[in-house]
Image 1: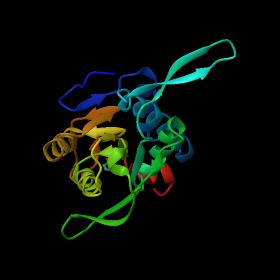
Image 2: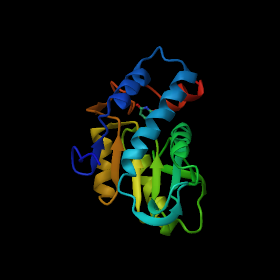
Image 3: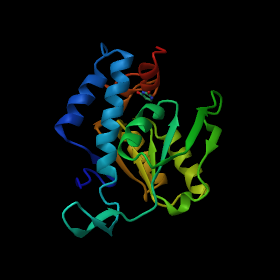
Image 4: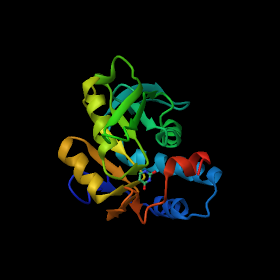
Length: 214
Ligand code: URA
């Protein structure tokens, strides 16, 4: 597994991840390509985030001999896309883990209070017993990520990991302050946010770019 670059944050430096991140940053990348690249990066970064899952031996027979061979030694993980941009990343995680459950979590920001308000959440009843992988491409201010992690913990989630595409330092600091037990994996780390809380240089609005609503 890659070592954390700063406490609790791992930037996945694999050349294919970095190559795809550049395609995603490029403003000329059209939505269909953006979705495909985002899905592929999610698979690669998600694999890094799950590199410490336990294994257990299983007795099988190959066509040649009996053997014990390792399989996942835990309940299938739960993938949590934070709506809506997280949906494109969830597909990439399901490529990796078709047996995962998907817990959709919808949040919007109240324009007056700027508070994250939940409008949809449905998770499996046994979420406490499963590794939980929250996915949201952009970790900007960290407000929605903190609210989403609050909600998942209230639902019982204990083994929580957060996979994003691009993080900004203020967002990483906010998540680590509120949820120091939740490690973060990302393809890139940018320094700052602009006055509209967009990541700079970033890649724009990930949801709009993925779903063609710019
Ligand atoms: N959400 C996005 O989609 N982009 C940003 O830069 C920040 C938040």
